[in-house]
Length: 317
Image (cartoon, rainbow, N blue to C red; front, side, top):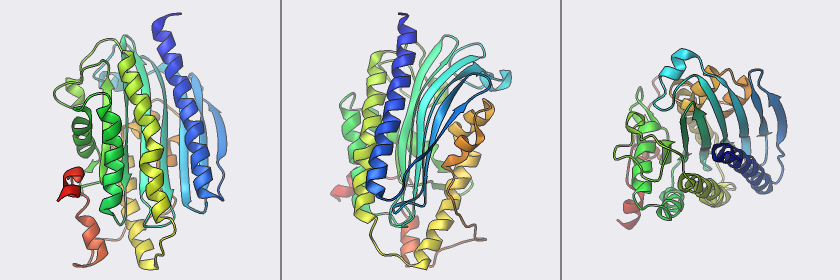
């Protein structure tokens, strides 16, 4: 079998199996909610499985998507991509966003993908945590789990991809990060990462198993990175004040996904299924004009977390 076709199949099978694994674990944690599955077909080629859990005991809305699509990019969109040639493409991956009911349980996002465009082939993805009332213990656990997974491949991966995450999940119009970060990477095509973590500097070449193994390790690290945090916080009592702050911060999440998110833009540009693309948006949000938390309140303290910081060093201080 053509080795490129083999990698395409292996990536698709892994992402589909990871969707199953994550959905089973989330249903078990929630206890009440069950995922609804929509199988969909893309007119121009391929399709996917969208799974949504709503109004559960823990998750107000949880979406876990798998897709396997192919076709042609619009010429203008294709020209903006730094790798590959021609307009033909193939893409497969998993994308998830979990919006808990309890304001003390963080929202979380993860995405892992493999793409081909002409002769160009690459992996991308990552995961990031968005707490409303951040707890340093939780933030450190999330980052330490990801660092351990990264270190098994290259000790330079975690600091490089953590920095990329801080830069990517940043709301320029608010001058703040979306949450407390995690790791983010894109256009990975070979064993060595580029010296500068920027799409324009990404190296080209054949995709090798090393990168696919790395993506699999990070994908399997998602549940141990997030579930212990959700389990710790899911029964913590909260008030209407804390719920309101959660809804205000969810507005920031919606702003990022609609203005900056590459996955949202990619899905819409490739004429994907709109309901699946926008499943990442929270079910309820609030936009309060010129909102500013009162000094000295927990809400003001939370704002201090929404900037790039070295969380693992802060654990030791």
